[in-house]
Amino acid sequence: MKKPSPTPEHMWARQHISGCDVNYRLWSAKKKMLRQWSLWSPECIFAVDVYRCRYDFASDRFSDLLGYPLAWVRNIRKQGDFLEDQIHPEDRVCLAELQVCHSEFIYSLDPRQRNEYTTHYQYRIRNAGGKYVSVISRQWVIQQDRNGKAWMIGGSMDIAPDQSVEEGVRYAVRNLRTGHIVSSSAYVPVSHKTFFADTHSTSDRLLMPDPLFTDDVSLTPRQIEILRLIQCGLLSKEIADQLNISIYTVHNHRKNILSKLGADRAIEAIRFARERGLI
Figure 1 (cartoon, rainbow, N blue to C red):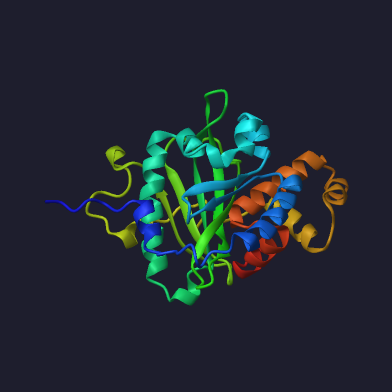
Figure 2 (cartoon, rainbow, N blue to C red):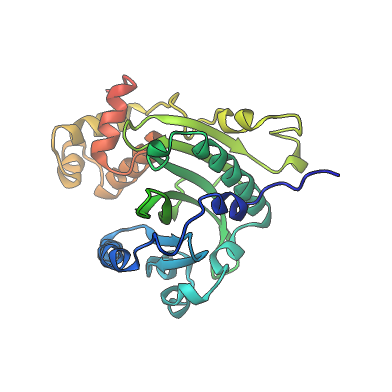
């Protein structure tokens, strides 16, 4: 009899988290900071309680960007799998398999290194109007129990600059300490026979190259010019004036630069670009 494939829930259960080891009082204080951050962040911010297997927080931006009822968003703890249910069915299958692969990678590491990684996904999610839009989501360990095990996962989500991706999931894992991308893939359902035949191993799945996330990235001459001006300390308005372009165009270039380099902030983008010899 074929052994059933593990699920993300089965993999998380391997953490063996005990209620005696989690500190909700400490999390409550950190959650207040997360909520404050979400007030000015342009992204959707969320937190997942691994111990209780539920969402613990979602920012109001889910209502702004995707049109979800604000009351639902603010009561995310009671919504069960509401957010997962909005993910395109094919992408949801891919995400589950990738999460299992990621868990296997994490559990292969020394326990002291397991919380040093952030995952990046691009997939399709349905907005309140019933239309599927491509989003980029990043997840990282935000709270550990007293034994160092991850039990609260933080995340962010934003509309992807590239809406031409019609199917499949893009995926990458980045080391938070070094900034290096350690694995990446472009992943679509096996039924499409585009990637990952049944004979592919887990390592094949994790190391399939994809231009959005791999180190082999390139910036346009204009993006390099703007990144160099950012490096010199110029603000977006100053860059717009110097290059005789609109500030809206500068903002779009900045967003695309961050996306290409897998960075969250301009200072990270500058460092990554230096490491890759782009500037």
